[in-house]
Length: 362
Image 1: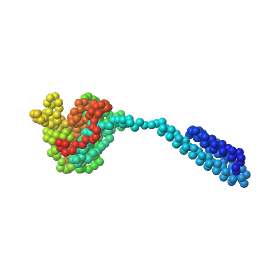
Image 2: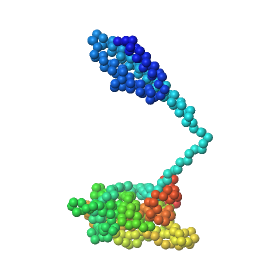
Image 3: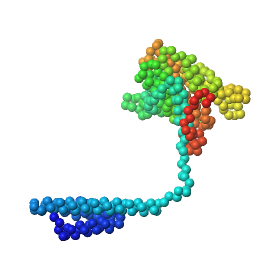
Image 4: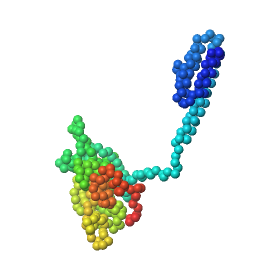
C-alpha cells in the first residue's frame, strides 16, 4: 500500500540513481536498496506483519517499487558504461602511421626435422611407427634381447637405474628403443614391420655423447626376409636421407647380442680439404668410410624370449642415432649443442618449415 512516506523515499532513490556519476556509486545504491538488508528488501519482508486484508495491496506496491528501481538501475548502468567506453576511446587512440610490430617466427629443431624425415622415408617403405615408455623393466631392456648379466651395459657406470623395489628388482631408463621391439613381438603376431623413434638414456657425456639422446630402430619379421632385404632397405634409406643417389655403402661383420649375423654399415665420404663430404667428391672421387648404423638378422634366442618360433619366422633389425645422422647431414660439430637452448644456434640450424625429402636427388 502506497503511503506519502514511501512515495517520498521512492522519489529519493530514483533521484539518487539518476545522479550517480560512476558505476561504483550506482552499485552502492543497489546494495543499499536491494541488498540483503536494503530498504526495499526490508519493506518486502514486513508484508507478513500486516493485517491479512492489507497484504495484497502492500505486496503489489512493493513489487512495483522494486521493478521501477531495477529498471532505473539498468538504464543508468548502460548510460554510465557507454560514457566510460567513449571516454576510453577518445583517450586511447592508435597511431595508424606506426610501423607494424615485428614478431619472431619459430623454427623447427634439427632433431624434430631429422625424426620426421626418417619416419617419412621408412613409412614410404611400408613401416609403421611404434612407441613405448621411457622407464623399462630389466627383461625388456636387457634379458629378452639376449644381453647377459655380465654385459658392461648392465653396469651402473653405463645405465641409469631407479631405486630397488621390495623384490630386489630395479626399473631402468631404457638404454635403447629396442624394448619397444620386445613389447611389439610379445603383443603382436608376425608379420611385423615397425620403426621405433624415441629418447634413450645412457651415463655418458662428451662432444659425441649425451646422457639423453634419440634413436630410431627398425624391425621386420616374416617367413622370407633375409640379409639381402636388410641391405637393400638400409642402402635405399641412406641414399634418400643424405640425398646422394649413388652413395657408396658397405657392411662389415660385427657383433650384437640380439642379432646374428650382425653388421656395421658404413657410408662413403670424403675428407678432402679438412672437411667432411658424404658421398664421392666431384674432384677426385676419393673415398673414405664412416660408420652410420648397426644391423643384423634377429637372433633366434630373442624370438624364443618373445614366444615366436625361430624355425618358422626370421627377420632383421637395425638402429642408428638420430643426433649423429643430423650432425653428418647438417654439419653440426658438437652433439651437446642440441641441448644448450641457445636461440642463436637454433635460428642458424633450425628449419622455418618442415622439409621432407622427396625423390632421390631432390
